Amino acid sequence: MVGHAVVRRQARLARQLDKPRPKKRRLRDEAAAKTLKRNREGVLNGYKLNKTNATAGGLNSPIKAMKRMSHGSRPSNA
Image (cartoon, rainbow, N blue to C red; front, side):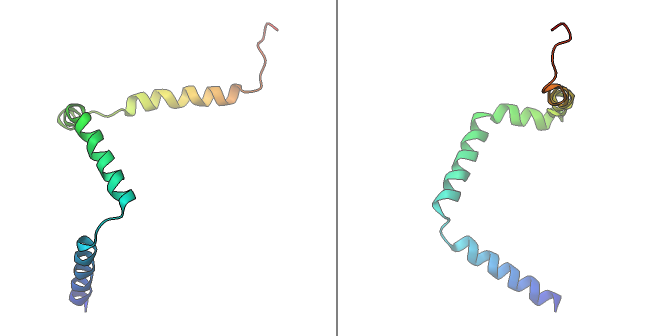
């Protein structure tokens, strides 16, 4: 029974691949490919060096939290 389900799923996926893709999806995929081409060197370096922007995000989060908490407060010298 499991084998039949796998075969049916593979057939459905094959039919979907044969259909022409909608224009919006095609444009989105083309834009993503263009972005990857433009940033190719940085993307490859990220994989080679195993680096992410997590450190910058980690520093940015507390700053944003402080900004949110300070809304509505007045300066102490006013």
